Length: 273
Image (cartoon, rainbow, N blue to C red; front, side, top):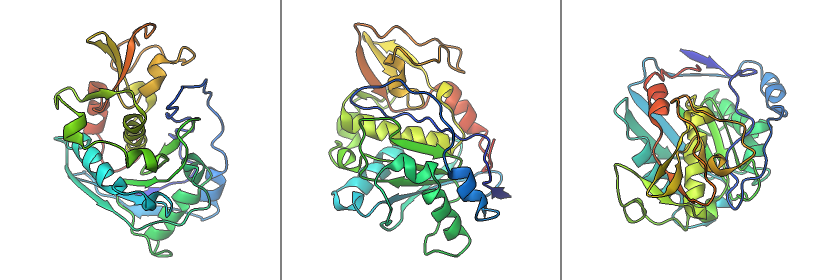
């Protein structure tokens, strides 16, 4: 089918991503993206239905590409996390991208990255989009929200320098059934990457859960550090679980999607829900 990205209704303007500290976050307007997209007329590119192969492509900003191993780590972690039974995963890397700013959230929310993807799909730019997820990683800071932004099929995230410091998956994750990792900056950054990919595939924040394991509060990707932010407004997830009290407990990060997020991903058909 053909997907038209015009004034998209399931935009996620407030994104996860406070790494050192989660500051109070409120939803805000979708900035200039809708107007920027409409200025192109109909933005459209072909997707498949039903989805048998999930196609993901990763690009780095020119500055992000100066750090060793960023693409390899993203391919490794995303490949593990999106290796689900609903599809065969096709993940690849595009060339370096020249951007106006390393602020990853601005690049998507104000239209620069979605427009680049649309122009590539229309043959107006030397950029070959993937059908399902087009992720841009920049050298943007990861201290103040929003550090990333995700809309259907398009996402951007900062933190390339932190991803370059990330240990290999098999070294960081001791239990593949329960991939729980320390709440440290490299791991938080890769969780934001997964979070924004989740938005690109139609997931929202309430597809995330938090639970207590071995005395620590563990947050899955679509919730992340909101789990221990006292000002976060969400109380229950679509899984029907409440966020446990994180006071005086260690905080850890889960790298796998929750059960209700997986149920939603199982219905993904290449279109916009």
